[in-house]
Image (cartoon, rainbow, N blue to C red; front, side, top):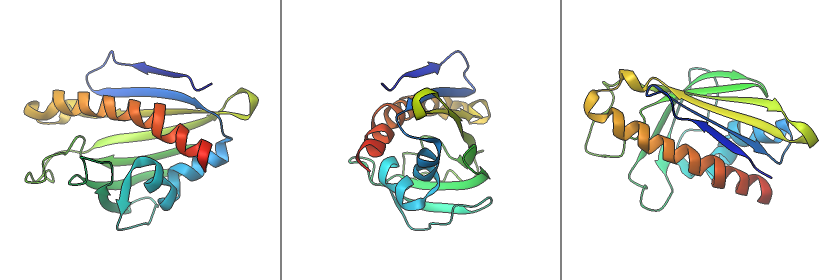
Length: 161
């Protein structure tokens, strides 16, 4: 059974966690192998280097979001424990240049759970530094996005892969 909890008490960070029916090494591979990340996250990557400092680029492949750029800078990679990137949250308008805005930090933390499962925590922080005109929409959009990714897309991917 996949369980999910979220903490929406902060306006600066989104915190979600899910227990996944897969060992930690398998979840780690889904997060950090470029082809697997692309498959479950719903992105077509044009660059595929996942290492600290790398800029991973592409476009979303989820219907209705194909115009949205996937532009992350890998912040941290600690094998089977922590993976983090920085990006421009909810950057949905292709006509807007988001490059002057600060990026939020997305951190994935993996822990062993009972029965060979994995507890995955995702924290996205830094929303309070965004322009006030975008902050609420970015927070809400990414809150809903992480819920969908962690409740549906990643568990489905792991079950079928």
